[in-house]
Amino acid sequence: MKSRHSLIALLALCVFASGCAKKLKPDNLPALSGNISGTVAYRERIALPPDAKVIVSLEDVTRSGKSGRFIAQQTIRPTAQVPVPFSLRYIPAAIDRSHRYAITASILDSQDGVIWTSEEPVAISFNGPEKPIAIVLQRAVNPNAAAAPTANSGMAYKCDDIEFIAKFGADKVQILLAGRTLVLPQVVSGSGARYSDGRNTYWSKGNEALLEINGVSYQGCKTDPLPAK
View 1: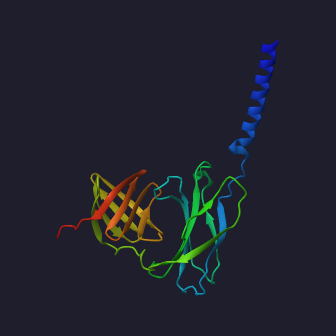
View 2 (view 1 turned 60 degrees about the vertical axis):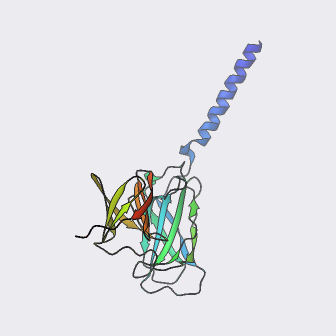
View 3 (view 1 turned 180 degrees about the vertical axis):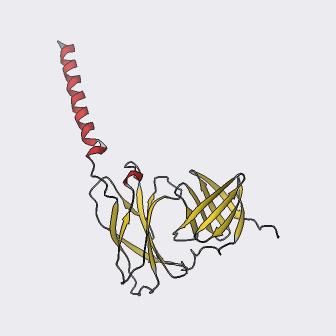
């Protein structure tokens, strides 16, 4: 009799656990719309330059201590002052509900120098109801800090484990490695020049750089003068 009661209790527990698991299935989460809306603003009473542009980016920031993986980005040329509305479109299939995501924004001048930028990324959850995102920017310390290197220029780097050459073009960089070349598009950065295709990232500031290839980060990268032609 005792074993029969134990069997009944075990069956009841299994049914209860099955029901809970069903409620927690991702299928019961709200569908992804493929669009994030909100506004970008700053606190200073300063007018936007007439040629300014606003860049809003969605990144996967699950990897702690490493640069985020770009999911989507929108460029806006505002026709009015702040707050500037944005409507960032993304591909729902690119979202992993178990990952962490964040939105950043920057306002650039006509020379692509950062004037205002996000002090901290704004966390966003895809597991609940969608809500408009209000992003408040901070004045950049050096508006020209994120200007890209001169087009058609090149820099050689020595890292702890590898060496490479970065050759800059219009809105992109070629990373020349031994037996391999990466072409990365430029993305907005609050500081330094940053290029990324989502899996690989080159990020330079001054005479130092960060290089990530397929999730592997190479440290200690510093400029090494190219030999004279």
